[in-house]
Length: 452
Image (cartoon, rainbow, N blue to C red; front, side):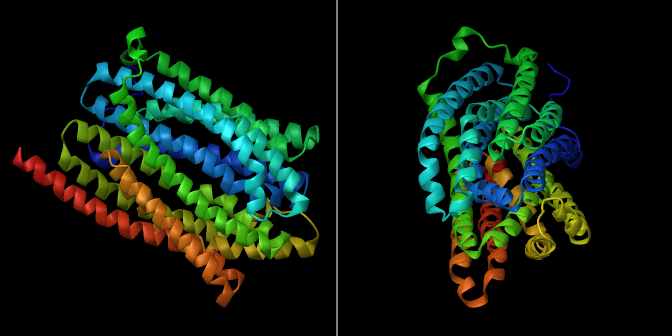
């Protein structure tokens, strides 16, 4: 077995969670780095309108990527539980079935999204003068969906077995390639906005191949021909876990697209400012998603090993670490946010100052209340690790309802600034549901464990 594989059913919980999460944080930083670099290179190399074009496509693009990550994360829950139970025979069958399902899902959504992209952009009130760039960016991104699905599937397999270092290395490789290609395509060859998406897809190819080669070295995952039989009960279980997580991300994205449709009505500069801050959203939550991945694997392995008490211990540790981390990130953004945001913005001095003012207001509000988002991620991940993906899906619906209500109602009374509070309202609504559900589920698990 690869030494990077980690058994999280023994040892100090906070150390297990932190050592697993740290490589993921670094990997997410590099992932966000090349996402941010798309916008920096496009914004500086082409201009504000090009930045707005990417912004207009953001939520739709996030939705499709979110579906890919949702399915693969759902599949990995069963893998983590089987690894924790040391059921390697079923683990191999589950991995093979997950590969088959991931390929089928990727092909299906590649076709559907190429058909849907133009009508969706028009539905979102995308301004005519940036429609062409937004459309080109999304067509290239969606054309690479199979690659995105492959990377997320391979990375999810590794994380389910406690290996968070290999995905980190893969993401570093992808980040370096993506940034180099961004500069070459956009600033060197002047190929336009769509070439930034092409750079990302090409970079993902390298990260997917790297993770796949690492999996092939794992003796526990040497797949035989018999493992590739797609059994109905196994496929159903995997889809039961993956579909709600994918749908959860779709629902969250729909709420985001409603926000984007309202923002698009406020003019080019507001769209550009809103986009600049959204490009930092990933950096704001970079540690939250890392703790979440860590908590899902930790919970899944310990549930498989029937160590219920360790789940509570891990949850307490994760909450404390998440709170401290969120406050540190918030301080950085509050004091250095304007400097970071300027990297995205070009234009006349008046345009730059207007866009900067819009984007910093939004960034400040999210930073001050960032700890709410971190509680959301960790609690949702713990519930997912227990094998329940329905309640997290319900939390996604709650997020969407809160976003839509805030963005459609408050601007009529308080103007554009109220749009900034849609995200925070979504976090609060989801937290209420998730924390309540987690406490109920843990009480039930402890009772069942004590009665055995």
